[in-house]
Length: 149
Image 1 (cartoon, helix red, strand yellow):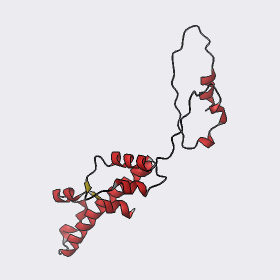
Image 2 (spheres, one colour; image 1 turned 60 degrees about the vertical axis):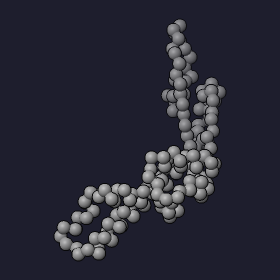
Image 3 (cartoon, rainbow, N blue to C red; image 1 turned 90 degrees about the vertical axis):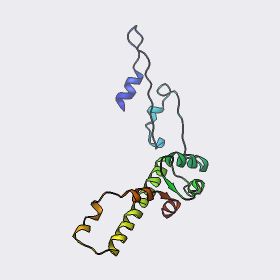
Image 4 (cartoon, rainbow, N blue to C red; image 1 turned 30 degrees about the vertical axis):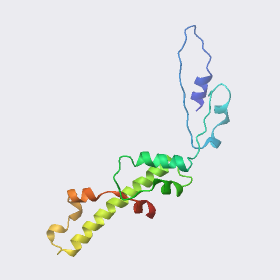
């Protein structure tokens, strides 16, 4: 940090222009920044990006679920309403967990089908078998996957 501040404060010593350098800093803990970094002349502007509101969370969820197969009626507004204080990373983790639950549902269904059949030597490695096309078509996130979380 000291080297960065020293480099930003160095006066030009030659007659040739040095060009422009753009320095961007980001933190999720602005209260812990060294006050010397915020001294005038170091950074020209500061932008505060707060926690998204409900409509922003709904927009973030729509982007996160744009390329995901969703099953049944899906209410992104309900999810956004039930996630106050969540930021984009939190919502991405939530969507990821919902996807994991969807996969678990297919795996559990495969286990049930195998437990109903006679277990033989050939079925011991059931979890190693590739997913069947009908299993892949059933793989979709349901609203209930989000509601469980």
